[in-house]
Image 1 (cartoon, rainbow, N blue to C red):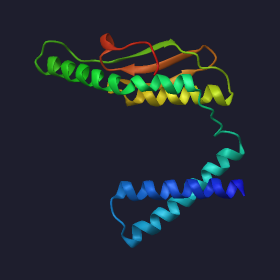
Image 2: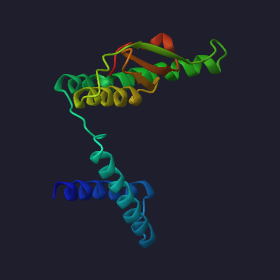
Image 3: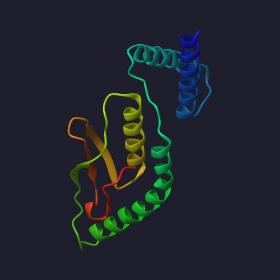
Image 4: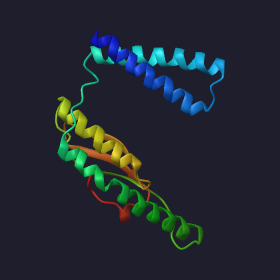
Length: 155
């Protein structure tokens, strides 16, 4: 019963997301949404049965995401300024990759949740793009467009 509820909830979410993305409720799109949502829900159920969808979110890491909106606004200003300097010929714009320490943890659900929250929060910022997290070394790798105005903290 729990698996059926899991598949149904995934199906509803994916069906709705499809309709939002295509922006129409034509009969053909409804059929396509139903089929794609069913495939996605069955794929999610298969991942769940193998234990690959186990996340537990810690309150402390979720609370850190409260500063993400301010980080988005600040880094948007950084990007616009860097672009203006690049277009004016004052400074060449080139990003680079940086690895820095991050408590990635192990293969437990709490560590997986921490990595997911940190990567998603970092992906929302316009100046940074998370690339990978190395659990063995405790490092996070990300691309920074303007590395002079980024911080080492995730999220």
